[in-house]
Amino acid sequence: MSACELCDSDGGVLIARRAEFRVIRAADAHFPAFYRVIWNEHVAEWTDLAVPQRSLCMQAVAKIETVLREALAPTKVNLASLGNVVPHLHWHVIARFDWDSHFPQPVWGMAQRRVDPPAAQRLPIALEALDARVAMELATPGRD
Amino acid sequence: MSACELCDSDGGVLIARRAEFRVIRAADAHFPAFYRVIWNEHVAEWTDLAVPQRSLCMQAVAKIETVLREALAPTKVNLASLGNVVPHLHWHVIARFDWDSHFPQPVWGMAQRRVDPPAAQRLPIALEALDARVAMELATPGRD
Image 1 (tube, rainbow over the protein chains, first blue to last red):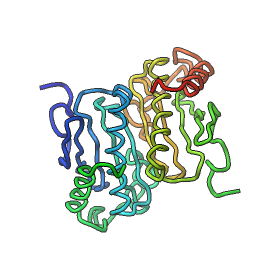
Image 2: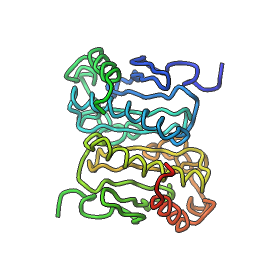
Image 3: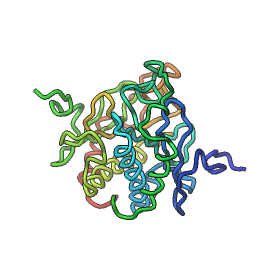
């Protein structure tokens, strides 16, 4: 066992695995369309990567953002690499909606409202279908 | 007047201006080493940019992160493109320290402690010197 939870486990619902990184969906009831690009090697900062690796990482982020926009038409997409608690490089890609529990606050901010029915039921497609579209886009070279 | 504050003003202390984007320092007493890359054109999402523009934008983000790491040795760098309140593309680049008011929470989360003396006085170099290093790095081609 290492001391890092992202070295010890996938860190969520596995959507795609590459030699350099994996993409998972976070199981978050408030923000169901919440994916992460997790670099496989244990590095803390984005600039710990060489320039071509940075591009590869951001290309995955862009592909996920593109699918979320096309499939969900969210109010906004939120991108972030923080890692204060788990300093193992991971990028958050989150579809936000003006009706979600925290909007317009960041997902790490204060809740603004109760959401009922649950957020996942309000998405225009099922999460399994969204996962499949994300996986297909990641397997498709070149659009980004 | 447009309806967008990032169309109407620089949005902070101007550090560098390019045809495509500008870099400003946010005047935030809690997080003094807080820069933003603001795209000049009014677009909401990172993937609204063409691929070469995305790279240009992230190259600026990487340059700022590199300077923050070299000049300040922060505990962590936080990167984010949110824009829920101001949907005009801007990237946050923030040096975080284990002693700062919110660490390990995101800057948008709950404060964890009072910091005294003020955060800017705890940085190893003055903000004006940091600004100058960021501006110099942005003017230097090729390292990233």
